[in-house]
Image (tube, rainbow over all chains, first blue to last red; front, side, top):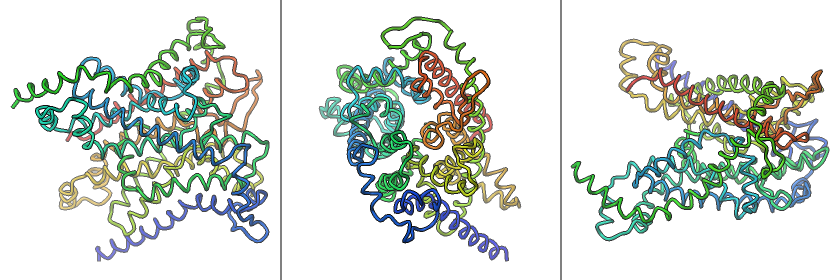
Length: 282
Length: 301
């Protein structure tokens, strides 16, 4: 009897969660529906399917390409460049630094390590004004140079996570390499780095998610008239007109979340693992 | 064994000394540009009056006095505190319940987990616009808008944040729940504990580390919220007080600081930087307090 009741409870839970899951994806469904509607119907008939009267076809997507006086494709390209370059820089340099800090363990290294941990509790607003001025003066205001700023501001969490892993690698492996005549550089690149790949995936995913979605840092650092990332572009749609074409906005939002969802479905396991590993920072 | 480690350490350590610039150099350079220097400069500038960063006058604590006389800052402080605490409670209760249900071995758990985590990948600005469309779609039926009534702005942002973060916290809770040992649960069952008793007396004390992390994260996330706030309401609706101060009713701390720096009446950048320092102390302090408070209640393993 009890087992029967328990099974019935489980089935009920499955039904309940199925319903909640459907509600959970409704906002995304609403974006899809409204991206095919004429602007005037988005506000009044937000949750209806497009009908013969309100259906706009792909007009919203076509309009979205040049909407807001800025080509949407450019912002996609800049977002991709900035995200990939920043992530690559962070993975390469912070893993090197974390290994060096853990192995060398000198006073300077300890200071750098604690500074990194400290930087994780500092909100961006604290440094944003001086940082944007410094970046301007050093000409770090283009998509090719802003990754240096990301490396600087994002170093804390990455070094923290890499150092945590490096401590669990037995010294004997590196000793063997040293005895066989490897210098530190060779030891790092041919022995240590391959062992760090799983951590690199976790850190990389966190950095990709951060940089791709970040709004405030690029809007303050980049030269906005020339370079806009996707979040900047979407935010500036509202600023550039009095009234915004909601249909076209939803089309752009749909285009910008499709790659994110595809990325998620493709590497879901790694993403969830990476996020759980990086749960020390908000 | 011990001796070997020490000698081994030094065969590794010695050659490292020469290579410091190679391994640490790039990060140190970027870290100085991206964090250390702006941080120091930020503290210094909070004691200065300036229009250009190269032309500053030292004014002592004057900016800080201004900060605490600024009605809009005080309003955003209380608003943020209320928001952070409300969202902390709702998000943690809901995500714990979801995590608990999804670790009972029900059918489709993996699919539900995938769905609940998905919104966490969408950026704050995009989230704001998605939800402002939805809320306006609903509220227009009653001839109002999320931009017109601050209570809708508040609860709208809570709903948005729940949608974004429940899945994230759920992942941390699931990891915690899965680490509760099967032996302990069995012992509770044999002792005749009901499901409720098991939950409150065995499971919750044992997932205290996860609860620590999640409360800490949701509190600081609530305090640091910016993108979602900017994209959903940007502080609207505004009210004008008798003295002429404009209060943006749904403006949170981070947005208030941003507006003081870059808003239309941005003349007091020293004050804005002082606000940023206060904000930093608040966020860092809260994090430390929260940690100390919840650590005490953790079960010693």
